[in-house]
Image 1 (cartoon, rainbow, N blue to C red):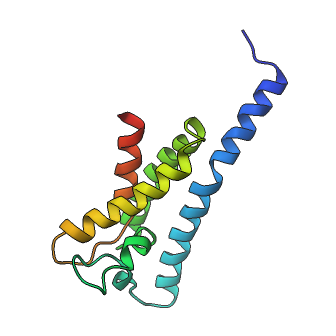
Image 2 (cartoon, rainbow, N blue to C red):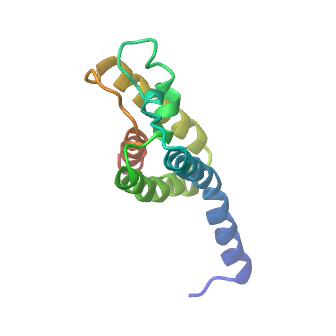
Image 3 (tube, one colour):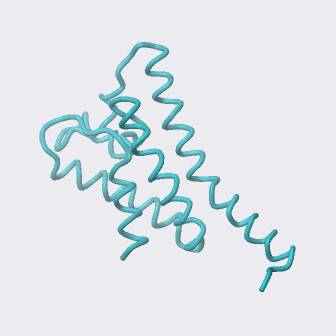
Amino acid sequence: MSRSSDERSFYRKKFFLSLIIPGFFTLVMWMVWISEVLLDTDLSFLGIYPLTLKGMPGILLSPFVHADITHLYNNTVPFLLLATGLFYFYSEVALQVFSLTWIITGLLVWFAGREAWHVGASGLVYGIASFLFF
């Protein structure tokens, strides 16, 4: 049984709309890393350092900073797949789930992480995966 062209168009449009927020987020992650490389700087101080005031901005900023290209790539692929799935299949609650996952995982690292700078979007990746699978 084949779908009508209107139905295919609807799903295609829904898919591309589901890519907007994950795509923009990924673009910012890559722009931050490219900026670090081009400016020969280290932005790990924008990560989370547990139980300190200096580490609090990292609750929001750490998903954009990565240790190296491998770390960034290993966050990019699962993040794009899982976040796009979140926005595609759960469009009514996706923004809330995404935002709460971002904040809650950051807070958990800030409260319970080891004494070191924590960077990357792994918390978001695992949080979104948990929502989708459970």
